[in-house]
Image (cartoon, rainbow over all chains, first blue to last red; front, side, top):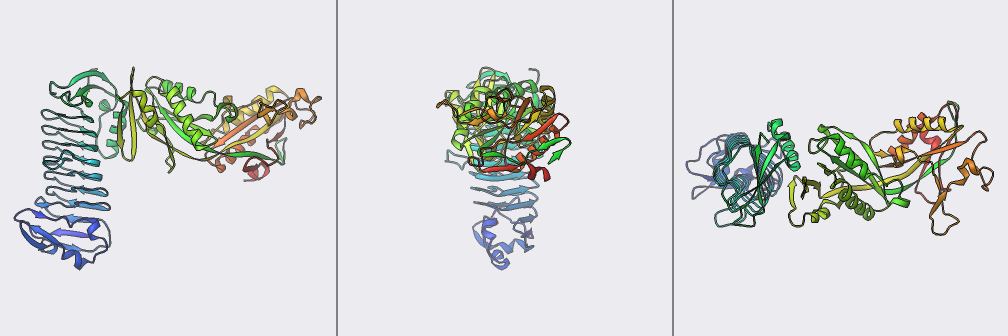
Amino acid sequence: MKLSLHTLPSVPLEAEVICPDKFIGNSLEAISAMTVMHGNRECALADFFTLTDDGLETIEIDGDLSKVKLIGSEMTQGKIIINGSVGAHLGALMTGGEILVTGDAEDWVGREISGGRIVIKGNAGHLVGSGVRGSDIGIQGGEIIIHGNAKNEVGNGMRRGLIVIGGNSGDFTGVNMKAGTIMVLGQLGQRPGASMVRGTIFSTQAAQLLPTFTYNTTYKPTFLKRYLIYLKKLGFTIDDAYLNGNYQSWSGDSLEMNKGEILLFSEGS
Amino acid sequence: MLIKSTEIIDTFAEAFGMWGSRVIVTGETPKWAMAAARSMTGFATSVIGCKCEAGIEGLLTEDETPDGRPGVSILLFAGSAKGLANRLVERVGQCVMTCPTTACFNGLDVEETVNVGGKLRYFGDGYQSSKLLGDQRLWRIPVMEGEFFVDESFGIQKAVGGGNFLVLGENLKITLAAVEAAVEAMQMPGVILPFPDGVVRSGSKPGSKYKALPASTNDAYCPSLRGRAPHTELPEEVTCVLEIVIDGLDESVVKEAMRVGIMAAAREGIRQITAGNYGGNLGQYHLQLHELLRG
């Protein structure tokens, strides 16, 4: 199914109906008539998109969707390709399938997902892979792959899964993290891992850590190489220095269980 | 049937259903990966005395291993799925985890799995941590040198053990040369030759005059018993018999290994090549020599 944005929303458009689970088994007419919320007003999907049935299960969308929210919400299967940028809450509560965005994404990419994979070729906003405000739990599985930068609170409350930031991440990366893995190939912002309980935060750059983190050693974590090879397969460029280098290992947050881990590349060791 | 001047006896190797697994061991250098592999495949010649059969399937380059380090592929076989699971835990724990710099990964992508890393993790005494990459859970177990990284689950599949052939030569030198050539030719994916450098001299028959023993020397093929044993299978000119045993992940690869091995072993001075069986009453696979040589 192909969708092309013909009318830019003037306020955020809530379009959780754009999801393979909701399209499968429905006719083009039925899909065109599906309800989207333009602010507080009910509209039809066709009021904003031109729909073309190309016979494929993959949903491909063209246009500037930076005001279109909740695409792929509760998705369990299939694939969505967005040729451009996308709005907030992309793939919220997703449990399977794959979403690919060639441009940027707004806040809350992959909010509370537990499976599937979201790939953003550009930058992402705040709270990638996090829980909603008031929830302790962020993502519980799946993969969120951001090729560019991400803003604050990446993986807030994350319990399982993998989040990769190809560029820099903002402040409080991995805040309240319960477990899982966050890999930042650029620079971490301030206070990474604040209140983390378990899990791993990795960066190729030095970082200013909270005093509640304790230095363990500098070594070559075998598991890290496997992860970095996996990232290469996902299309990231990984220097041999990072593949074969040594990493500082820090434990924290000691205000919690002190079972979290931050690994920072240590070139000279 | 004759290959060169060697007579191929019209008989069959009687092989057995087993359970097999493939273990990938990596290390910081090929030396340490091989050290762990040698240790893990030691004392694993026969299920009769070792509870499992294991061998090195091949060397792996950095591009062929999950963690980009040099590695060794090992095949390990046992008589039951449960037995195989137990042997994997024992051997990965005692031979790989103990070896400096190594990591250990599943090498069989099959449906049925057994828990290995998930049991070894307790050695971490609460300091272990797990990672989930794709569908595979992995365990990081802190050790004095760093950490041991191991897959939680290892694939197991039904396999074939006990393919074999016997090389009957005129003297030791010729027979050794023949089996060495066969072993070299039989290096292929999916099979191992579990005995020392692939060759066994103490071929056995089932049972014994001593009740406690499940197997005993194959007297019909012992040249020194030609005049004493009740029955001999040896032509007059034969003074030495060596056997090659093959375990494989399926029947076809065992047969192919036997075929190329027999072809390589046949030569001047090797009077016969035959195979060990128990009258067809024990093993579920009857690997006919003439049939597999005809292709």
